[in-house]
Image (cartoon, rainbow, N blue to C red; front, side, top):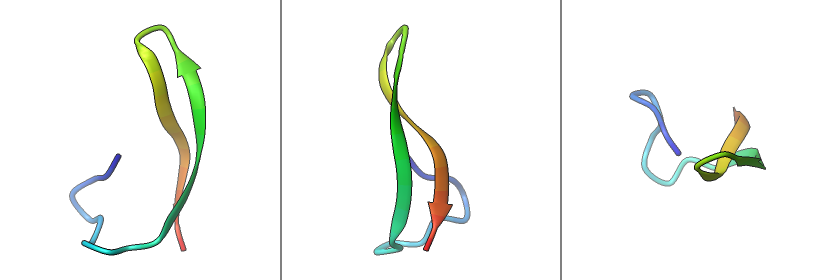
Amino acid sequence: VGGPDLEEGQEVEFDIVQAEKGPRADNLERL
């Protein structure tokens, strides 16, 4: 999870999706 603009302590909301390589975050939104 994250990205170059994700701040430490930033609240985020996302969906966990089951991908081939395991669960991953999708539809990430900063709150």
